[in-house]
Structure formats: structure tokens, C-alpha cells
Image (cartoon, rainbow, N blue to C red; front, side, top):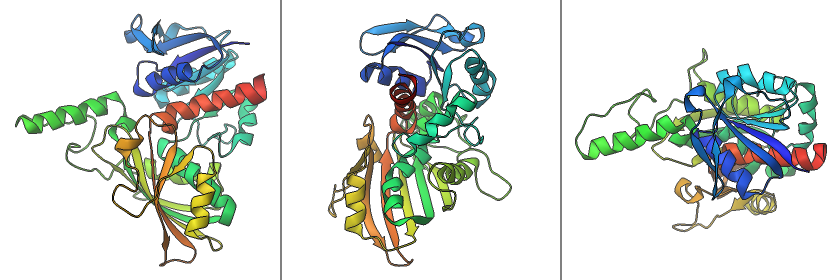
Length: 338
């Protein structure tokens, strides 16, 4: 049986990846519909290597008969249209922050908490976690199963693609301007991003955290374990694709470096590249286009009881967004809709 699929936000960076991954993985679709704002109506977007889809306008689209709707249009748009799609009978997989922390909406990383997908029946909506949360919890799930995580301290190094196409263009244009001694203009970021790092992602909250930092804590507790304490510092770096994280973990009982490596190597979706030599680790540039989350620099932290340090990298547009959404859809089809 084939399914009718709608991709909302099809002209954006994540929407583009969703379409490509659906094609790459031969998702059982009889029809794929590309949706975006009315300004993009009639524009063509690629679906796989050879097919082109004409973009239809989201605001006039009738979701009746659509089985699955993959959303990545921005939180405000999802807030308006995802419930409409669900009311029409589609199961919505939403990549925005809009529904993640609502108690009756499951927040899913398929390798980590697939059993929670069944909760989609409450509202017809499943939330895709934040990109930085996805890669971290995927690496940490086998360790949590082994020794139970008590506390996490994480610093992220997040690429500009996490902020959309406009942010990628801004990094490119600022870099070019610097080389030709032209004016450096900024619109997407509060400070220059080219040849710089910015310790702010999303808005500041009253306690001094940014919303991105708060998301990592809340989402990790919802997905992995509500007892885990987490503090984050999220930083935007001048990289086009690929997020990196320096993760410090304190466990409730002893865990060795060798046991941690073995557990992560055996876990689906995780690759361990950890050699204590030059080039013995993975960087964001090397993970672009890859589906797995990669872990390097695994080592003991002797300053805390039962502590480990990890370096975690992933393609934020794939596993951090589009691939995770498609894997949720695959799990739905395999375990709930077949």
C-alpha cells in the first residue's frame, strides 16, 4: 500500500532534505505533494534525482486524503496549519518547536523512544525534537541504559543552516565581503557570524538562558528521563552544515571508557570514531551528508564521580531534522499503519 504524503515548507532547507530523503529511502508513497507559502506557488522543487514537483500553496490546500504531513515551515505556520491537517485525517510530523513540550504530543527519536509514537492518536501530531537534542540523546541513550545519567553539561557549536537558508546566505555574503573589503551586513544574526562565534541561539529568557538552551534541557527530560539535570551553552559558529557538541556526563554508577565505546558502537544510528591521534575524530565538515551521529574524544572526567567527556557531531539537516522525521514516518507505517 502506498501513502499520500505532504511536505510543508518544501522550499526551505529542511523541506528540501525531507523530499530527498523520502526519495532516497524509497518511502512507500503513491503521491508526494510539495507545499509552501503562496509566494512559492508554481515553483519547482526536486524530488530525488530525476523528478520535479510543482509547489502548491499551503493556505488553500485541502489535506483530506493525505496520510502523512511532514511540516517544517516555522512554528507560527505549524501552529495554524498542523491542527487543520490533523483534523482532516493526516498524521502530522512537525519539525518546529510549536508542539514539542505539549504533554499529549509525543516527542520522538525513533532509536531512543519508539514506544512513545503510539501517543500520536491523542491529537494526530508527533513532534520532531530540536536538532541539537536529537544528536545528543541518540549518543547518550546507550550510556543511560548502561549506567543511568545523573547530570549533563553541554556546549554546542551549531552551524548556520540550523537558522535556515537566509542564515546560510548571510555567512556566505559576509565571508565574501570580508575578502573583498566590502561592507559586512547582518540581518539574520545579532552579530557578525563570518570569522566569529555567537553565544546566543534564540531569545534570552528571564533566568539568562536562551530558549535553545532551555529546549535542550526540557526535551532531554521528556525523551530520555525526567530525572536528568542538564545545563547548556549554545553557540552559533561559522559552519554551513553540521552541529558539534562537547558533552560532559555524570552517571549514577561507574562506567568505563571501553564500556561506553562498546555500548555506543552497538547502538543503531551511532558511529564511534575515537583514536587518540591527529585526525582520529570526526568534525562537522566530515559529517555533512551522513545519516549517523558520530562520537569521538571519549574520555574519563576525573573531576566528578563517574564522569565522561564526549564529542558528538551530526548533520543537523539530516538526522537533526529531515531524516529523523522520515524515520518517524517509517516507524508509523511499519508498526501502526500497516
